[in-house]
Image 1 (cartoon, rainbow, N blue to C red):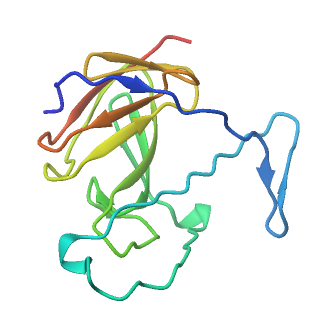
Image 2: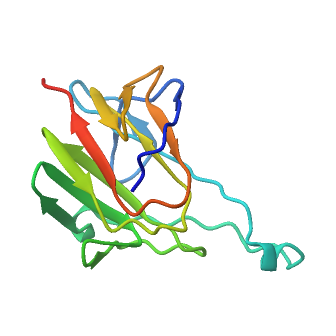
Amino acid sequence: VHDEPFDPLSSGETFGGRFDQQGPPVPADGDASWLAQLWYDALPEDENAPPRPVSSAVGRPEDVPVVRDEGLAVRVLVGNYGGVTGPVTAALPLVILHGRVDGAATLASLPPGHNGFIWVLDGALTAGGATLTYGERGLGLLPPGGDRLRLEGAAE
């Protein structure tokens, strides 16, 4: 269980806007889009290997499975969660989820050997006893060792 303390980090500024099917991001009233670019270190066995080509993968929204549990709806973008697999694959073993918490919920079946983070994109959330809020204190780091995370969404 991820019940160890962690300190929220600043997530910095974000872009609000909309991505059309073609072309650059286009701001639209009432729409919000989030883009997260993740970089990770190579595995120790890859340290002296030639660099892999840079690649990007995009999953179509209709191909992203949703896992629903009491108080929790999770879109599985990359990896496996809740018995389903996301549409995007990665060169390393990753799990990337996008979710909504209503009330209290438990994010379960997390790989216990993985590092992780939780990033609040709207509102506030209590995760593992720490309060995270959108903006200045919206990112929390999770060390390896836990296999589930207790979440509590703030009342709207």
